[in-house]
Length: 390
Image (cartoon, rainbow, N blue to C red; front, side, top):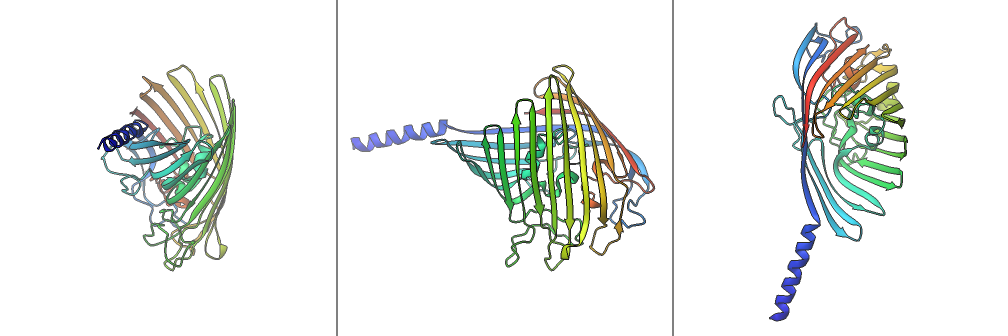
């Protein structure tokens, strides 16, 4: 009896120690602004054609928008120390629109991130679930506005699969060098070149390649200098029979910080191939930007994006008209004032030529909903907002 009591007491002490080494954190961001956009189409451009790529009459619009600098979200992050330098971890992160309270990312409950994994101090981290791609992680260090939701062409730069379902991912940190790679069994992203309601779910018996995606990257951060290189490929379904394409991207970026300023630049090559390797799109995207901390409270950001778009076959099918459109470019500006570490107000603005804001065109299926009106070739956006982190 005494031995049983001692064993029970020891087990209770061990459980208490294990519990003390575990943690779950609730976190989030709530970001809203009032936005003005010029030359917005009064209809969704579902009937884009070679002669009328931006249907709908152009009008100016004032509206309440969710997520100017950061997508509004809430999440749970958990870590358990398993001993010997090994940890278990999970992240569940839900994006929502503050203007209506609804879930975003296609209505997913945890549409921003949802994964579980193991992390070793010596080997690195392996995670399974819905996650960001390797290219997203690498280029984040060279994004002038830190992937600001409102006026940075993230979907155009990284591809609409920058968040992928059904993903296994490895990240290893070795001093100033970070190496990572991922594989998605079905990215969960519809292709703008497909006419039916394909979700890109993949994992179809007998069709292993369907909607798969993969990539890898390496980045360096040592002192004031940083650099990175990454590759990404998504193999979307392009017809009802399950035939796939190959949307390929490769990118490099660099940054240098001195005093209160940081300079960034990058280049991204892209090639979208359809059935029988038909070229659907080819482009070369360049960007430069700078951050300047005027005071501890006030920060400024200026960025410029230019895309050498050499070929584009209009969705929704591979038989669509081939265009050689004018090259789009965009200049963006942010002024961000921090009342505290958790609350700030901001002004964000952008001007885009030869596309909707964030290069929102048929090339990405108008994913950002900046529909340029008929007869217009430029767009201005201005937002004044408030952000709170918790």
